[in-house]
Amino acid sequence: MRDLLWKIVDNRWTLAAFIVGTALGLLGLSSPLWSASPEISAGPPAGELFKQSFRIKNPSQFFGITNFVLRCAPNVSTKSHAGISDISFTMFKTGHLAPGETGTYTCLIPLRFMEDDPIVTGSMIVSAEYDSALPLWPRVRTEVVFTLDPNAAPPQWVQGKRLQ
Image (cartoon, rainbow, N blue to C red; front, side, top):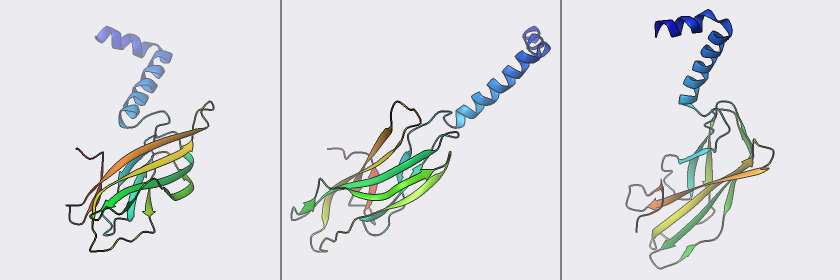
């Protein structure tokens, strides 16, 4: 082992490559070195189901996410079977997240349900569409599904599909 280390140190170019490779390897353990899909997560409960904030994080330390559009598409039903589905609302247009940056955006849906007709089931798809870092794919789309937990206090959106 000692002889191997001495051979590495003896050659300047090998030593430089070893140091750069080790540094990039350690950096790569904490974040991707390439362009990666944004990470979408729900923010704290807002008190109102249709004023939910979402955090969008750019996990790459080298590539920004440009010209992104965020949309939320709720699908809810109430105790009396009233509800909404198959619509989407744009949260934010033409955003930019620098490498490693996190932004918070609110899904503000202009809907009101009667207090005597509570929401019993719900899901929401939050999608981000943005420019690709690769020239062959002009736009990329990422989607995350959130499910309503109506039994939480206050009710909140939880990442993932509801178990049947």
